[in-house]
Image (tube, rainbow, N blue to C red; front, side, top):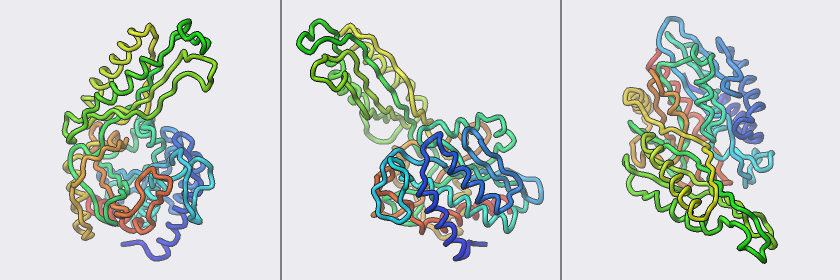
Length: 383
């Protein structure tokens, strides 16, 4: 069973609608409503809404008892202004589906179409439309929702489109496929003064100037082995925009990145200790907050075997070149506990703009590839 030409036309139109109306993490109310409306036309056996926020799950039951398969897509867009001349470009200023989550949702709706025409022989399929992937909170919120226990899968699978790789070529590997990362916000507080009398205040300028290169030096980079770490300065602010006031406050935002979760705590502790030492030298106070906490995504070997079998059956090329990816993903959370999970990366074209670029747009040609992969996995495992 495969999608018809009319299916592909309608699914493309659905993606374009999602693309026009992006909503960022935690605000995906209308996106979820569009997903639910599309699902209701396909009569799944159950639809669960408001899961872990605005999450949606659709359940298709098989005729006999068997394992539960979960296929996941993300609801959220990015707080980035889209630069595009496409007819379906974003209509919401400062927001855009520039990571392809509109395409990922469309893949699940395509899979739902096939399942609505022929249910699995056994077990069940759960289509999970997850909120708030971009800030790392959504998957944890979903599995923390008490209603998730009734949906908890034996297997979980996901696809992420991947620019820079030829269209339809898949990246697939076992073990870590996405690095762990965490945002660290550091705030120094001293005392303002008149700009003519800076000695009467307590400026964090020197501490800030020393801390920024010190933090970046902690991320020694190198090969993506278990010792890899990267510290990226993403934002800095010193005082207020004024020529008459010497600053009394500063903040620095950095993203900490490691290949494995176990090393994140050490890197965070080192960064906080360095900031604390600089504050002490200058007589400042320092405070910290943590944001966008992503665990490493780890592919289970058995789940990878099932994906590889599906790719081979569809004659889709695949390898593990370039894995793990530096970018973070919260899909790995679905693999905690007894669930065996794996994500594959589906090539979006070598000339495609990169993810999070203001001109990125999910290629509609990927819809039939992604739906076919998901459906083949379901058929292989459930009949």
